[in-house]
Image (cartoon, rainbow, N blue to C red; front, side, top):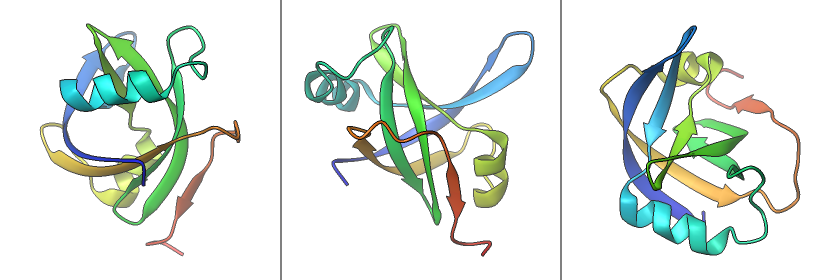
Amino acid sequence: MEFEFSASVIEWRGPAPFFYADIPADDSDDVKDAAKGLEYWGQVPVVVVIGDTRFTTALFPKDGRYLLPLRTDVRRAEGIELGMTVEVGMDLNREGTRPDVTRRNLG
């Protein structure tokens, strides 16, 4: 994986709660440098591995850092809860493959 880091799980309340892995500042800087030309509307397409679950998504910029969205199916598959620290492996999604989830631990 191109990037590996530990991130805290946070909640951002909008019309519905959304959960994100808060990418550390140094790692966010590295992603920003590597993602030049891949960003669209500030978002960066990525392929992510957490535990036994591999999925595609796009990072959201927030206060000079990136947030990694954690969909409900990913959180359930890996037992991820608010306040936890998760170990993340992540590559930039240079091929632009569409969002999907592979749950190796369920299948």
